[in-house]
Amino acid sequence: MTQPLLNIEPVGFHPNFANSFTLCASWALGTTRAMVEVSQVDRFKFRPGQAEGVRKIKAAFEHGAKTVFLDAPVGSGKSLINLLVARDMLGAYISTPQVILVNQYGSDTQEGGKFAGLAETLYGRRNYPCTYLRSLPEEDGGRPYATAAGAPCIYLAGWPNACPHFSECLYYLARQAAQAHSRTVTTMAYLLLGIRSGLDRPNSGWRERPLLVIDEAHGLAEDLVNFYQAELGPHTLPGFRKKWLETPADLRFRVLESLPPYIDRLKEVLETLQATREFTKKVRERLERLDSAVKSAEDVLYKLKTGTVEWVHTYDSRTSKHTWRPLAVRSLVDDFWGRFNRVLLSSATFFGIESLVRDADLPTPVERVVVPDCFPPERAPIRLLSAARLVYRTDSLEIERAADAVAAVAQAHHSERGIIHANSYHLANAIRKQLPPQVRRRLTSHDPSNRGRRYDRWRADPAQDAILLAVAMNQGIDLLGDLARWQVIVKVPFPNLGDTWVRRRMEQKDGQSWYSGRAMIQVLQAAGRIMRSADDRGTTYVIDTQLDGLIDSGWFDLPKWFRQRVIEGRRLNQSLPGKFGDYATRA
Image (cartoon, rainbow, N blue to C red):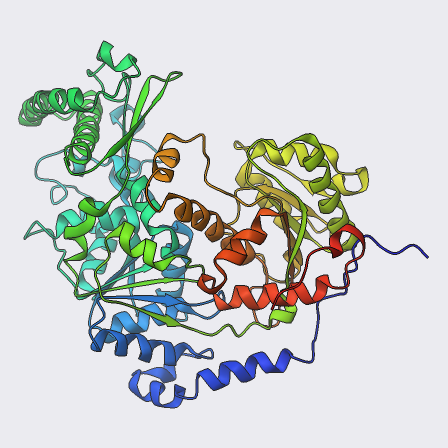
């Protein structure tokens, strides 16, 4: 009898299954005391470690910590921990770079939700309808899909109070509720734009609160870099079509000289139009365009005028667009952290906390609170197959080896759904072409234009062997139960060396550790897409040999849940035949 290429036993009940719960229970011996300290606990059904996590975070703050990192595995319930700490600290702003997580907070804290009343959720204007514009006939400027982002209250003097629909405006109702509540959940963009600027205006309705919570904060430094990037081209702003913008030189100082008179000129036109008080459809449309241009120009000017920042400049010759990104954000956010007495950052995938504290200039001293993983590692092994070395310019032989390994995994799970993670469309297409027909027929793939639709179609596919070949879906998706029982990480997703900013960041003293750390965080994120509850199961396979070195060098910085699952994967790998059995297991 021919031995199978991969010896994969079903991941199910294991004798050590109960030990995981013993560990959780032993960590949470203080839970009874913690529950007494955490008021109103009878409202909530606590998972192991949640109440103790709240107690430890509060204790860290009481003992002088300015920033606390909550290291909480998938399924540990960090959202409730965040909310309870915010409540017991008597007020907080809670934010996250992931809009999908803001939606989850909103669902959980609304009336009837499992955490009802613990917070109010607020989104940006474009998430709310403008009932005024939707009520107008089209010939008078009405738009059936108008949002509050283009509402007249943005650019008309005396509005929103003068708006006939003000009392029923969903945006202002949500904002008033968020301002009245002591805990507000919002997006990172709204926090940094709307609330941050509102704290400087006495009549804005926003007030300082003692605590700032940022959920999914593992990539905070890069999220801030992306937020503060500025873009400008000959067609970005109306009436600012400077010929010199069509050259690839870094024109930051010329832009700084040219934008203020441009903004002043637009504001004069705005004031003249507003004084006419004849707000016809044509006038309103012009006012909207002018107001949008002023805000865009002011945003670029505000970012680029910070002289203590090193701006990394890139130029797109196809669109003549200039982009400036800060190499570091320290001087951009140092005054922001100071508005809060304490900062709580939470994630399941922290890696390189010291680097994050330094890059984001977080307040010190810093403490770390770890919630134990109550998911049995025996049900979620991570198996390092080390079948191919997939570097920036990978040759066809390595691609073939990688495709062989992907096919072997897919065929071993011939009756189970799975997901294959690729970090580029080029790699995804190369792997797809090499797969055998019996695997290709199970695939759903996508391109940038149909990404969401194809993902939704795959989720709804009733086939029990359906496979999604996904590009850059290692965050923000939840594959519970039979949606995916296995996944493959084809290549370690290092930052793109073709990016000027990445190359400049690599030139810094800690550039190599930063580069490896960003890749490791992406692997950690991908590893958490399956195995979403204690009674779930799923196996993760990694094809790329480069992960071996990352794990060796950063073993003790890795979250404990990930280390335990790798150890379990190594135990299983001992039984792998042939070329897959060469990987030496390590404890």
